[in-house]
Length: 142
Image 1 (cartoon, one colour):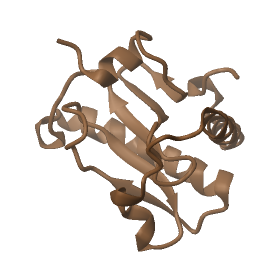
Image 2 (spheres, rainbow, N blue to C red):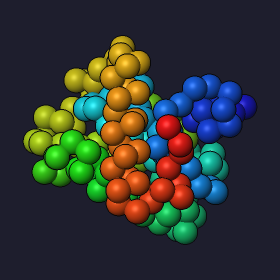
Image 3 (cartoon, rainbow, N blue to C red):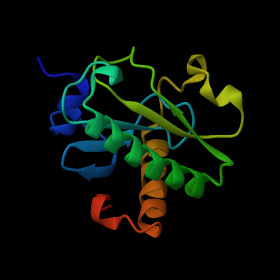
């Protein structure tokens, strides 16, 4: 059975994509810690990050770094936070979010019913920032 993330990547479920390439995609979380909270997800259904092939894990982290630069730019954040938790969906994913302090890592504070218009705005802001950083070939058109 396909995971939730595989279904999003395949287009069976909606996703607000900010990055697409062969093997890895990134899309906004529907339960964001902060606006711009993005999930970097390999297309391969690897459950635990510790089981990922080193090249795949490396590519996910390289993309997470670029997404981090984008969220810092788009929200003028002092830091980009990175979390690999792995309990929400049995499909490896890396959380990247703009952060100002340690409270921004508290999953008890996620916006469970995120407003679609706010998510669309965050997607657009992050896409613009990623294009400004020179990554237009991987950023979907608006």
